[in-house]
Length: 133
Image (cartoon, rainbow, N blue to C red; front, side, top):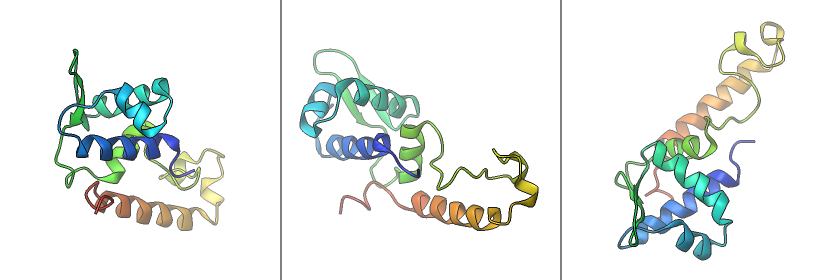
């Protein structure tokens, strides 16, 4: 599957953070977006680890964007949220790394690889700004 709930929740959270005047914590995001707090906390940790958001501790702590919203690509956000590059199919980007060990005889790999490259390019050129306007 290309994008899971992790990506959806990451995008919704980042849009909320982007519109906030100060840091927004997981508790507030969880309530606002009606998302499990523990699940959202893991997603936000991944986003912080990948420097998409900054994390602030303390009473007024929370998260802010680490880059301008027009610089954050959907590919980098979804890759951080999913903890891997989202893929259209289980096909590997290299025929030699085929998970089913039939890469050298697979007749659909070129199609799948071409499709994956197009999806990656699309997501790389789409920013958080693009989906909020």
